Image (cartoon, rainbow, N blue to C red):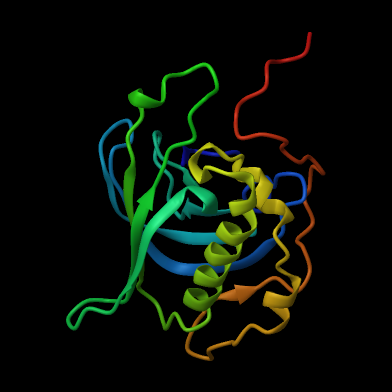
Length: 199
């Protein structure tokens, strides 16, 4: 997880990594996450971007301390689709933090998250999300310990076939990217960790 990742000011999309392919965007969700600086976040409305590398929640109305939340798919575990009787469908799970190389892993704790589908169905989003998670895990098994693996290695996961075969639920407001959106700046990130400025 990474709090407040780089967001493109022009279109509000996350700044992509090299080889990252955005699969879909889902409006009308509510997001909850715990154990972040400034306290837990709950009930913030916004949109989810899902790519072959990560899932990024971007708030519709950002605050001074919260704009977006980035979850590498490789670091997500315990994910579960919930269909409560009296509340909206949701996905809950846990996500490990992205720990800078020079920091101690013991200083960072696992976050629990919940994505609530407040507007419309989720018959398009849920299968694509679970298929991407499964594909990323299978691809990264060959590299050993999943928690120690580079989350950007997931960019090499083949998702083209998955997107061609996607079922689209007419009650789900999810929008699938048939081609990659243009990045206004043309910049692409190379790592999850901030780079020292060049002088």
